[in-house]
Image (cartoon, rainbow, N blue to C red; front, side, top):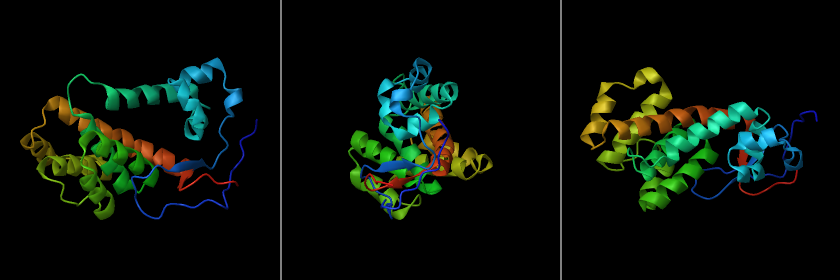
Length: 203
């Protein structure tokens, strides 16, 4: 099937960062779910992702998607030490907030709120931006994530010292930086392939 450029004249794009669940509308036609081969399903890693237009678009290259998804799952779901899940999600939310990816920020802000029970602080990050005062530990995680997102050279010893002073060990620091680095890339991919929407649109 040829790839078609998709348009959504009836979509309503979110105007502010939010913790609400959003839709995501691809600009390039994803593979139809009925056309997914066993190789495509293997590339999805999680078969339930076949319901997502984003993953059905990326699965046009199943090997790359498989590597991407396994990396994602290891960064955010690996329970063997390191940073608590809430703060891995915080790093991703801060990165997405800086990059302007409303969809990714909504997903990871919801997870950060769910696992931390600090919904008001997470909302402050979304409303006020990455300079919001969230307390010493969260400020250190956000500052390091933002520096890495702006340019890797902006991340320096002062950010690592700040993370250590906030109580993070080497494994926790690695988790924070990997979460930020992964979503610094993932934001750009998502922003180049589609748009967020408040509700499904018929286009």
